[in-house]
Length: 374
Image 1 (cartoon, rainbow, N blue to C red):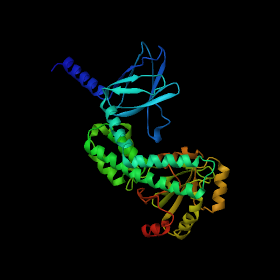
Image 2 (tube, rainbow, N blue to C red):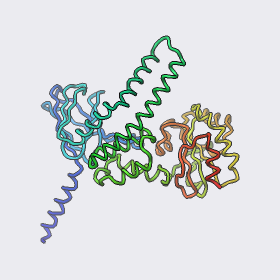
Image 3 (tube, rainbow, N blue to C red):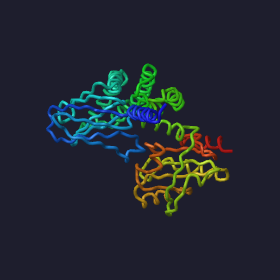
Image 4 (cartoon, rainbow, N blue to C red):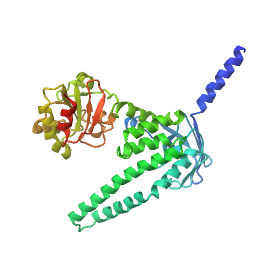
């Protein structure tokens, strides 16, 4: 084979490989004026929310076009001024029609992932558990807005609503697993699996996530949601290697998780403004006192934004272990990387840096840690 022929084949193969994860959006906008700016942004998990990828184009002759690279089955936010719509699109082509300037009537064709997303959403919104939850949530909100309300009735309705939400989270997990079983090659799958587990860890267990994710075809795991699922499985599930981090302590000294390698470490997420955290602190303090002579330490991560409030709470609650914070509230770097959405929360790390337990309840914290840490 001649050198020119070989070079041509290599270039052709590279072009084919390059085009396999590109997306071309052909759009129609019959009511938009020429020059109207349209933005499209790839939606990312919380860890990457600050790293935006925005492409822009302009309407010309009531048409527009986007050519997007590195699409492996993603979802996007398309915006015009302050209005937006979500698009779930796989590599290849997509035809998008914007029937109005408010993005209330948007249709997508010629893209299977968009069709499959509509099919899945239709299953969810017609699910009996979802409909029951939606009704009781509406009833609760309506009652809460009344000028004359009975606090006991409101509390009882809130409990019913929360119970139905928990039931729906489990039902949503079931719907996701059933969808993946019936549509194993859908580009939607990694996002659905990520979203279900992220929404509620009770909806799909860690073991189920690992099993389902491992069975997925490689090509549908290469999007950002598949990558983030792998990160969570490898780094945040029980058995995973806890991600290292570094933050300042109360004196401004930078402390790393790896500084405690060789010890059991309870990473305790809390904040001075979090009442359940403050209520749990006596139990954590008791653990610190009774396990002081064992190969164990506690590392507090505060989601405070004011240093004076943080320091005052440490003193008031008598917390005598290492405390760290970047004073960025819910943007705390460690909480973001550890997927902490609610506090109090905790991770137990073994001497080798592996996660061996998560979110240990304060009622059983001491007995659980005594059993694990000899």
